[in-house]
Length: 205
Ligand SMILES: Nc1nc2c(c(=O)[nH]1)N[C@H]1C(S)=C(S)[C@@H](COP(=O)(O)O)O[C@H]1N2
Ligand SMILES: [Mo]
Image (cartoon, rainbow, N blue to C red; front, top):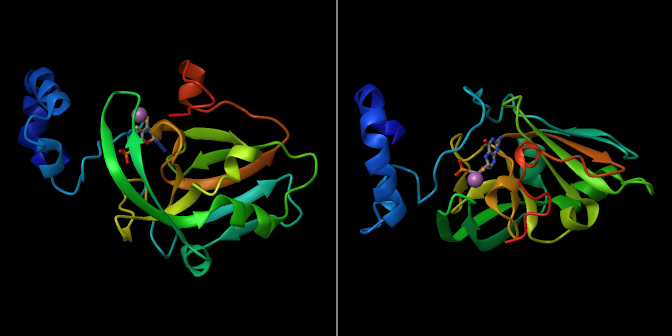
């Protein structure tokens, strides 16, 4: 839809209602035909988001840890990767079946920095400067929770939250913070962006 450009944006207020109905019904799989979407719909609560790449991307892990550390994209790519295939589901009703995310299990990152005994939760921040999320430490250590670098075996695009996003396979997609830039280990769960508007902190599918 973004690819429709200025003409599309000008027509959007008129078209939006019908367009959305078409997407929701998806009679011929039209969402899958939108350029590069793969069935995903673009979400961002920030008006604009900087583009980051191998050169300037950083992921900082701090808080209740023994060895706070900043990872480059190369650091993350050098760690053992896990591929998880799972259905992605947004609370808005759209769904992508059998999405394949690949990345570094969060448990490996937690082990790398050494989590202190009093730690109970993990807070995630993003380089859009706005979005936040959180998990309990037990949830964060699940094998199907990762700092994802790839989708469908291709580098994660900016639109999908690249170069690195959180992916929490067993929960609604709002838990999967895009443009991940910070992980802070805390002593309690601090609710995230959408949870301040009433979403469940435990967003199990
Ligand atoms: N940084 C950031 N992460 C985010 C969001 C957002 O607005 N900003 N939206 C969430 C919601 S509600 C959904 S459904 C998914 C959408 O991801 P997509 O744009 O790759 O489809 O990202 C989640 N993570
Ligand atoms: Mo969502």
